[in-house]
Length: 113
Image 1 (cartoon, one colour):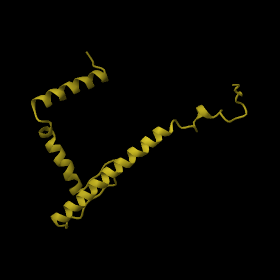
Image 2: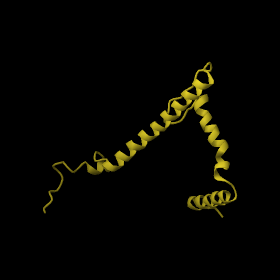
Image 3: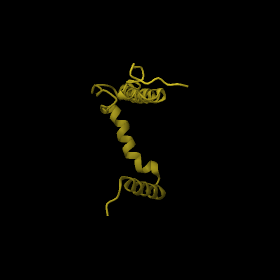
Image 4: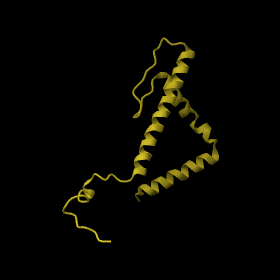
C-alpha cells in the first residue's frame, strides 16, 4: 500500500520522536553540526551565499576569526531574505497581475454604494 505525502511525513515524525526518546537529540546531530561549522572554515557555499574559500596560508586563529565572520554573514543573509519575504507577504498580493487589470480601466463596471 502506497503512502500519501502526509502519511510519509507523519511516519517520519513518529520515527524522529522515537529516536529522540531513546537518545540525546544533540548527540544524534553532533557530527552534522560539527561538519556544518567546519564548512565555514574550509569554504562555505549555499543558495544564499557566494562561494567563499579562505586562503590556505592563514594562521589557525585568523582562519577561525574569518570563518566566524563567514558564518555571521551567512545568517545575516538568511535574516535579510526572511525579512524581505515577510515584508512582501504583509504588503498583500501583487496588484499588477491579470486579475487586477480591469480595476482602473474604462471597461470596468462602476460600483454603486
